[in-house]
Structures are given as structure tokens and as C-alpha cells.
Length: 63
Image 1 (cartoon, rainbow, N blue to C red):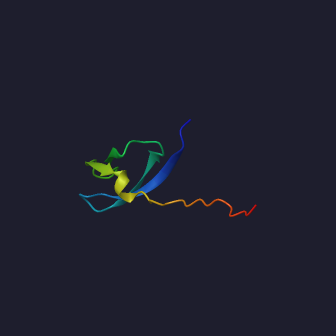
Image 2: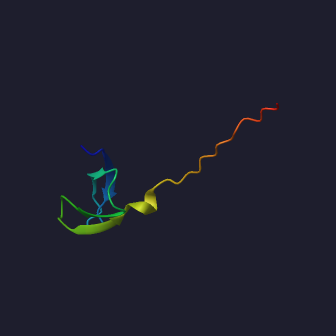
Image 3: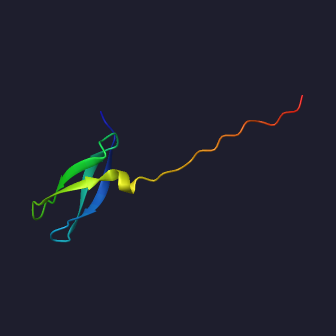
């Protein structure tokens, strides 16, 4: 079973908001369909991913 996250979208055509379940291991681009007007849109999820840098430090032990 794949983990999924519910993401909030706003339709480009009728401006109504809806949610969509997106697999966390999904591709960068997905096709979503508005449940109200049934228009399709391609969404690039990489634009909205948070980037972070993890800094790891070793101990400064003197022998």
C-alpha cells in the first residue's frame, strides 16, 4: 500500500477548490480532473516541494 497525501487544488477554469489524493512517491507531474467542471490540468508537484539542507556535524573530541 502506498502512502497518499490529500492536496488542495484550485480549478484553473471555474476557480472552485477541491482536494485530490496524491501518492507520496508519485511522479513530478500528474493529471488532475476538476470534479465540478471535469476539466483536466497537468500539475507539476516539484514546484511546491519544500527543499531543505540537513547539516551533520561530527564531535570535536580531543584525544
